[in-house]
Image (cartoon, rainbow, N blue to C red; front, side):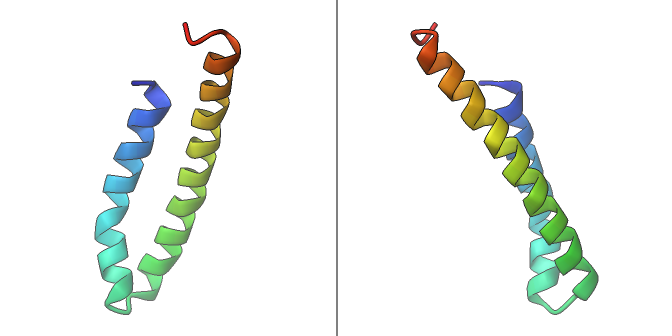
Length: 60
């Protein structure tokens, strides 16, 4: 696994508590969730770039 993938998994897992709080109406938690989702988006984009580089390098 790539470091970025592990970072993605850890970030998603870390957001669980805030998602639960946000669903219960905690407005501060909704802000934290939105911020975390932006981080997840950036990490996912980096993983996508890595995978394209692997594909273009012949999978090695």
